[in-house]
Image (cartoon, rainbow, N blue to C red):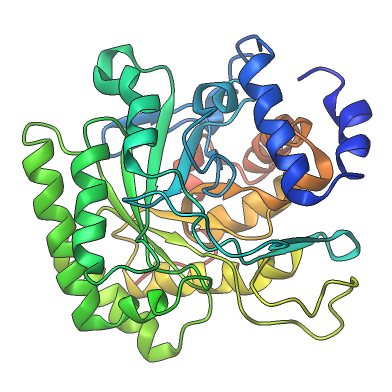
Length: 357
């Protein structure tokens, strides 16, 4: 979006966060964008039978209702994750529920899975029903309704509706803003939940089911981490997304909204999420592709996550402060860092700092 970072971004920061976000989505939907330039070949990676032109993805939360997935891809992302999408429409938590912490390069949200529901998202993704017609990789992040009596059924409904339309599915059991959700990360409930989603996915797409990933929280005990790794390997899911927003508040967190309830994202999450990423890489023996999320604001951050074990990375919060030009900068810096490492491909750098075993 030419000129966006220089001219539009400062104006958007004058608006309340949700108003600015809504206006950004409208601009993406209505302003035609050219195709991005071809990516540096060193950034390409093949996972799950899919060729990612670069590893930099747009995290869930930006395009909750699958309104601008194709436009977001034209910003230069290697893939886009829409959602979180709940089975039935729900408004989420009362406003205000999204807060900027610019001095910390962070944000706090307690949105609470505001979603227009599966039917609306599926209708927008319907052009992707023919895999051969898809232009770019789009995943779908699945959630539950706040009043759900059967979480496994909610996630299974998401898989039924979106497996034929998405390049991968992500089970979100890690948002801190839906009561009881994070309890689903326990060994037994998680095993049952994954089994239900796998069955629904297989029924909806018997010939070529999309990969199934699990998005986990950063606020996990050592026992929780081990249990999740064991369940992931035992159930045969295809990858982990590490990690969602945190309930922790680091000492000295700056900003007048620093005391707000909700999940913290952005720069303060970089170190703890990368440490968790390295731990999950070790616990899974490097056998599962990992997606590194949390605090990425430059090529060095993406490089650190890849060396810690990520095959792909995602970002969102840094876009609030730096705009879409950030995507191209991260890719240029990452390509230079990989060559400085002596790598001929991105895959050679995955887990370089944390050999598994």
